[in-house]
Length: 219
Image (tube, rainbow, N blue to C red; front, side, top):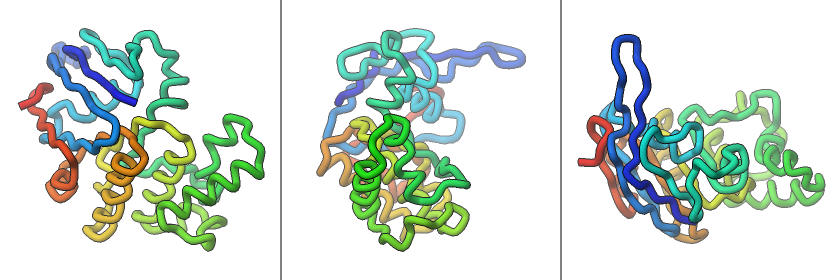
């Protein structure tokens, strides 16, 4: 599933002035590739990622996902069926077990418990976590393990566009390498469109293409 940016801009009203956070950005992201978006804090990276996730709409231009503008998508359905976001702070449910966290999007779809459990097991194994983790709570996991659970939940969701906002920001170098390897495999082996916002040069150098932002635009 492709995602295309067509002269995308986004402005919001600050306390004293209107801020143009994204400024006339265009790009075509292709399935089967892993992209890195880099830039200093305040360069517009996370705002752009939020627009691609359908959390808000561009004030100018369009974002086309699967041939349809995000303006014409039901944006709840967009985030359920097409686009999944992985965050730096993992966003796991603290009172749900690992298996329940992974199974959550499947339960929302009212998939049978047996089928959902089978799929949750399959994707857990894909991110190299053993069955011993199934009944653990997130508080009993390391940062790297929590991020693997978050990725497994994304896999269970089945979206073909994966957006990752500083997914390794809280991890050491070993866990960073493992998480990036998994994300790249989702692009290269599963045909997903993977877009990673990162400050880490070690993450960016693993991507198929690197895009740099400054003052809301590509440089």
